[in-house]
Amino acid sequence: MKNSEIKKLISQYNEFKAKKKKKHTDNFKIEEMLKEIERRYFHETGRTLKSDLKEQA
Image 1 (cartoon, rainbow, N blue to C red):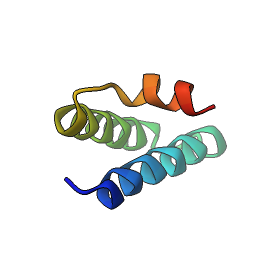
Image 2: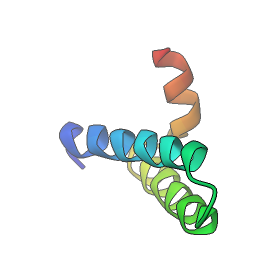
Image 3: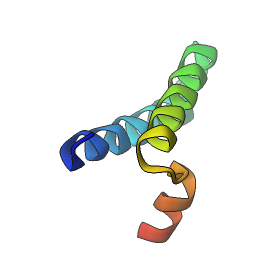
Image 4: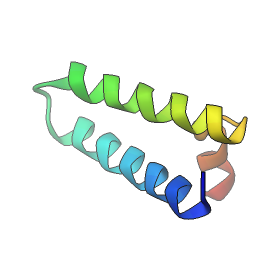
């Protein structure tokens, strides 16, 4: 996976996190998408997305 694709996963993750905070309906679908993004990120990089986001902050 290219760096641009990894950055796209991170941006999608951040968008879904924002939607989850704003919108209380369909949280199940949003939560499933977040888990899928976290899984793909882990399989591509070998690191967890949450820990990498903490390091960037």
